[in-house]
Each structure stands twice: as C-alpha cells, then as structure tokens.
Image (tube, rainbow, N blue to C red; front, side, top):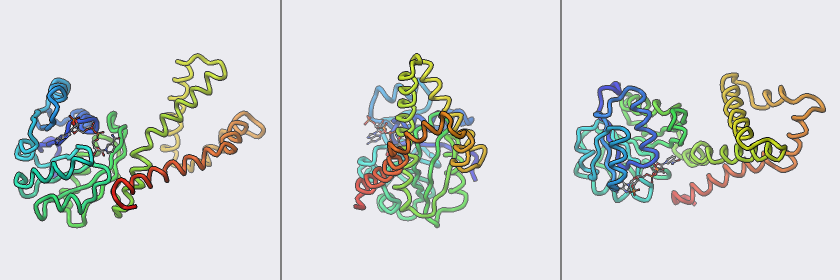
Length: 275
Ligand SMILES: NC(=O)c1ccc[n+]([C@@H]2O[C@H](COP(=O)([O-])OP(=O)(O)OC[C@H]3O[C@@H](n4cnc5c(N)ncnc54)[C@H](OP(=O)(O)O)[C@@H]3O)[C@@H](O)[C@H]2O)c1
C-alpha cells in the first residue's frame, strides 16, 4: 500500500463532500501540495485555495494528468457521465478512480473509463466533515489488494470504512447512513422542542438533546450491547422513561423510522434506474 503522505490525490468537483474529505486528509497529515481539485466555479476555487491551500484548476483534465495516483470523483451523479466521457484520453495506467456519486454503478463507471482502469465506488456521509463518517466501499474483485488498501486508507481519514460484497446493498447504505444524518437532526430538533414544551430555555434544550444523542450513540458503540438491552437499563418499572417510550410506540416512531429508511431505499433505486 502506498502511504497517504507519499501520494498525489486529485478531486474532480470541489463541493461539500470533497471539502469534507480534503479537511480529513489535511488533518491526517497529508500536505496541501499533494492535493489538486478541479472545480468550475471561480469563487469556490478561490475558497478552496484560501481555506485549504490545495491546488485548484478549472479543468478536470489537469487533475487527471497531474500525476495523481488517486482521483476522487465528487460531482453530482447527473454530471458523472459527461465528466468521465470528456476525460477518456487523460487517464494513466493504474490511476485509481474513487467515485462517491450516489447511484452510479461500478459497471457504468467502468464503461466510461479505459478498459482495466481501477475504480472503486463509495458511499460516504456528511459526518466525514469531522472525521466521524462511515463510508461503504464496493470494488470489483479484480481490484488489487494494494489499491483496495490505498482506497481504504484514504477514506479512513474521514471515519470508519466498511467494505460491502454486494453492490445491490448500496441503495440500502444510501438510505441508512447516507440519508441518516437528516433523520438524526430531525430527532434532535424534536427532542429539543420537547424540552421547550416542558419549560426549558431553547439553548439548554438544544445542548441536552445533542449531548444525549452523542452520549447514547457512543455508549451503544462502546458497549457492543444490543440497543434494547441499553434501553431496558434506563427504563425503571412505573418510571418516567417507560411513560415516554409508550408514547413513542403508540405514535409508531419505530415503524416510521423503518419506513423512512425503506422509502429512501426505494427512492435511491428509482433514481439509479432500478425500479
Ligand atoms: N452530501 C452528501 O451527504 C453525500 C453523501 C454521499 C455521497 N454524496 C455524493 O457526493 C457527490 C458530491 O455531492 P456534494 O454534496 O459534495 O455536492 P456539491 O456540493 O454540489 O458538489 C459537487 C461539486 O462539483 C462541481 N461540479 C459541477 N460540475 C462539474 C464538472 N463538470 N466538473 C467538475 N466539477 C463540477 C460543482 O460545482 P458547481 O456548484 O459550480 O456546479 C460542485 O462544487 C454526489 O455525487 C453525491 O451523490 C453526497
């Protein structure tokens, strides 16, 4: 595996996810001069340069031809086809493409690249911005172990990486961890509203809601226990928690969350042309 400190990394598209990943790379000790980003918007180019000190260009070809061992494709899914078509002649043998475009299948990417060009498909999420993301990685079995490790190392600066063996799971990943932060923000907002309804000042209610979500999630992760076990531990007979839980169950919160993920999965399948 190439060490991250030794490789040149290109980004095509300098939007939100690219910025999140760049931030993670810099924090992990990658030097700004190792990174080059292409981005059509002048103002955004300027911002990326000022904010991170990375190389910027208005040309995607410049990034691919920069000698970058790894190129991260971070444009919106609708742009992938035209962007890659225009770059056909620019790829160097062995240059690894990491696509984070939601819903764009590995076979579609391969069809837009020179034959045999190594490519990985990844679904990250926005907590990557603070190194707390989770990214699902899918690669063809033909990808070399070294390239797989390089992709993993690069993504791990933004959080946890899970490799999935079935590309069909990507829609489920998108629905759960890709869209998931929005569900959590909605829950945080609602919990805070609940505190305000009980007479708490908003700033206090916000802090209590946020820290409760963070602390509970960390405890769940660290304990390795089933969520139901931890729930039972804070639910004393005839107490306050069971009163609240009964309301959540009669309101169908559990079913609503299950169906939220399922609806997002369906939408992801529709957007990627599967149904
Ligand atoms: N945000 C998420 O939670 C999330 C999670 C997982 C995966 N993703 C995936 O990550 C990708 C990027 O999402 P994002 O949220 O970072 O979107 P974004 O902020 O809109 O970033 C896309 C960037 O690409 C630029 N761009 C547009 N056309 C281009 C071209 N022809 N060549 C080079 N750059 C071009 C855009 O510039 P202009 O603004 O000037 O057009 C923009 O800066 C998407 O494919 C998305 O599916 C996002």
